[in-house]
Image (cartoon, rainbow, N blue to C red):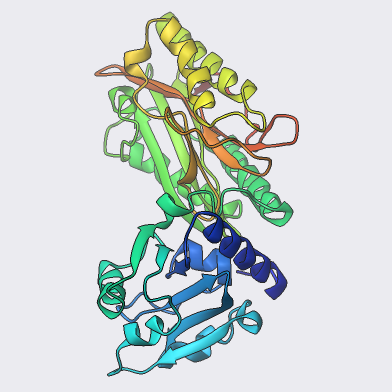
Length: 370
């Protein structure tokens, strides 16, 4: 991960160790994936069965367990100056190597992406140890973004917005969903995305499926079309949804879109530090429920975003964690009418000291396309 220093990663590791101790954990075990990228700036050269694991705890210096053949790659990681490298060779037991860094009866948080064989191997080496997933033990580990991360999040939002402004200029009528999805993917890459994670184009009745994969349906005048797209810019995610219409919409289509727009605005207006995440969901849902359409709003109102496009915090009933400045998440209510059409409007929002700030600024009205 470029642009971050060894000091940045050391500070993150210290926060992780402190948070782990505060949660009653002996430490944090970080395997390849977004957690390792966040805490060490390291991604192994290939996803293999060989154990790679960062050990962070409050009572010892951090250590990175790596296969000996990948040590040269690990030595180039930006955090390596502040981390002890502990390697193991093929033929040796990597779990015995890792066990020497752990408390025999410790309870550890381990990355959600850890392979089951590695968790079982650690349990075999340390029968008295126990493990919880990172999302259960330290769900907000990456949730609060620092200033450098927020700049990247803003750049990702701007790049997605630029793609939207261009895609609404292409022809929709008499073209397949997959063709417009390909246009959208090309535009995201052209505007700075290094990776496109999804480009949903859901037209007509397909729009009533929130995660519809673009298919061969030919769009015609009269279709409502849900466009949901995003990916990574400089390592950080974008995700935005706008609903457009091929030709002039009907009164019903306008009314449903207006209802979703009011719900999305209510969710945004509720954002402020200290309130529970579930209050964002409640604010948006109240608007749709009051209009009698609650049964057609079939998913949570939002999800966190950062190094991955879906991560804590989640804007959903039951999530009582308070919002904090620097958190970034989507606000994306929707209404899905089976067999007819769907409408969703989504912005990424960051929590500020006084409220919220949208990272997507494209118009949220029902845009007419040709």
